[in-house]
Image (cartoon, rainbow, N blue to C red; front, side, top):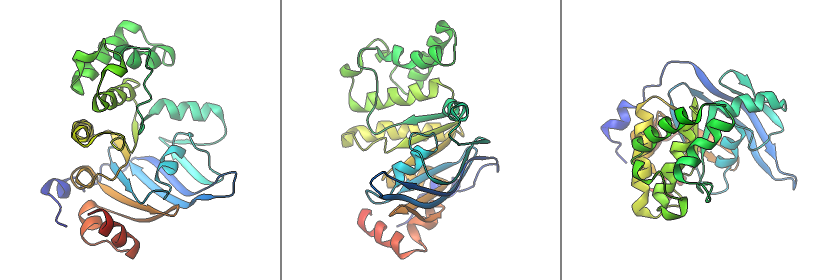
Length: 259
């Protein structure tokens, strides 16, 4: 498959300041299932890394360890210079710097769009509400739904709700954004509007780790694409290499299924 010119331009890795470093990460669930089997990943500042793989491969579990939404039993994870441990102070410090956008939008249904954005910055970061509201309106403008600020989530389409979720994550001014299959719950006609927002974020050099099956997004935006299978990182490469000349047979089989 031939990649677009944009993909080739985006394969230059940004300045070498490591924002996420995972080494030998292993996780078992209480039932004994070995979900992560020694996963390694390094993400530099301003880099966009896309993680792909079959269902059940450990993709979502892996990125959820980066902000302690999932624990792990072996290995090491350092996020923006802070080692992830059982110390709640470290976990809180990491979560202040890492925003996350989920498959489901996880918006508060009883709050307006604007209130969904302002709640955490006011309560957690202790910022003035008027200041946060100005920032929130600017972010809603950025994702193209400023006119929806006074509505409730149930009055919006799925694509609009996911754009609210992205704006809410940005309102906490994170240094890193994690996306866990952000378009998988959307109708096909709504996928593009969310991916367009994510493309714009990537142009602003926000560090992003994205679990997705959206091949065009990976081709055009990612600096590197990672394949996970059976709890392991199988391959990682720039998109033009990953999609055109992968090294591993497991990657080739996966691409045969999705392309």
